[in-house]
Amino acid sequence: MRALGGRDHQADAVTVGPYGAAMGLLDVVLPSACAGCRRPGGSPCPECLDSMRAVGWVRSLPVPVVAAVAYEAVAREVVADVKFRSRRSSLGWMADAVAGVVWWARVPVDTVTWVPASRSGRRRRGFDQGQMLAREVGRRLQCPVRGLLVREGGARQAGLGRRDRLGDTGIRTRDSADPGRAQRVLVVDDVVTTGASMIAAVEALRPGASDVVGAAFAHKR
Image (cartoon, rainbow, N blue to C red; front, top):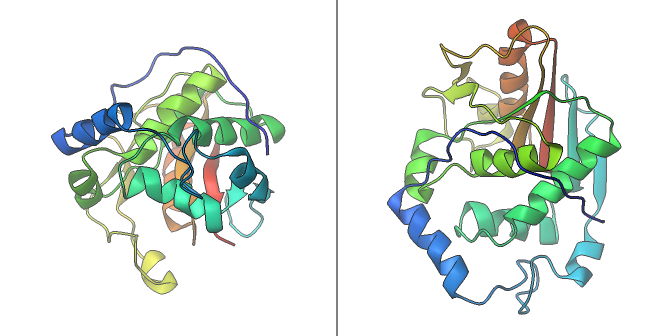
């Protein structure tokens, strides 16, 4: 797999709590290591990068979604480093991979948004990893990033079985959100498993936009 780059953009401010800010500072102070094999250096290292399987279009979902890599082995560790260990050294590469698959699929994009994390997840981690990833993806695609969705209640998705995940996710459009009928919206998430959250996000935005496509770093087949 190979990465791509981009330039600056207008974006919503990223909300980072005290814990998230402290862990972000540790990323600067501590030496970086590959999330996959833990060898010192960039994350992921070239060997781990080559071991990931590309995905492309996710055909198993009822809404259009692209994903960069399969959610297995190294890709799982890359996500865990950002999402559960609050280490962000892999975040830029994840954004490169998402932007790369969007370009590969020739998805037209006017606005980037993200699948919001649960309230408990944001509180526990101190930040919303989907928001941070969307900000970096927007920069690479040279598109504005807007918070168009909220998650009101709904079950926390991590750790749930397929049946429970497919219940109400609590994802809604913000009361003030109006992407505009001519807007083509890209919805970013770190991982798509059952697709429940991504499906809810895409369907919530469809009435107010001309086209909505999901894009994830990883997909669990």
